[in-house]
Length: 126
Figure 1 (cartoon, rainbow, N blue to C red):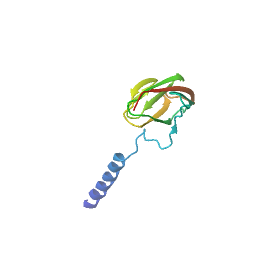
Figure 2 (spheres, rainbow, N blue to C red):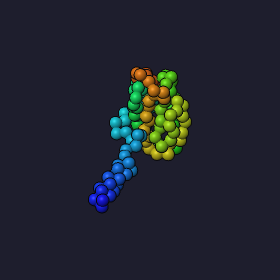
Figure 3 (cartoon, helix red, strand yellow):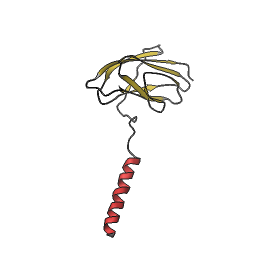
Figure 4 (cartoon, rainbow, N blue to C red):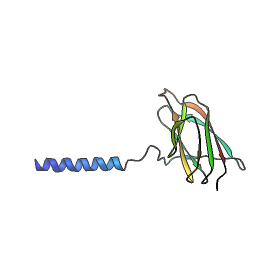
């Protein structure tokens, strides 16, 4: 009986450690960089929102910059800006750090990928 409880205790401790250190959905290591045309403060991201997954883009910012994102194409397309807002099709925020991950996917379950177009505008900042 004693052996059973110690084995169970180890299993529970390992399971809880796995939950505590599980990577966040927003912690993407394979994010593509958002590229702004030279001298421009706006960019367009075109792509495919997967049916059952997300694509990630990393946006480099300056502290205090006003950032506006808007879905221009893709009726089922949404984006989430890590540490800012989830599941939006239009968002304006002020940058408080130097980079943000933008995760793009589909709001409703879909059978196939959907083409999307998202505009990103930036202004101000230190």
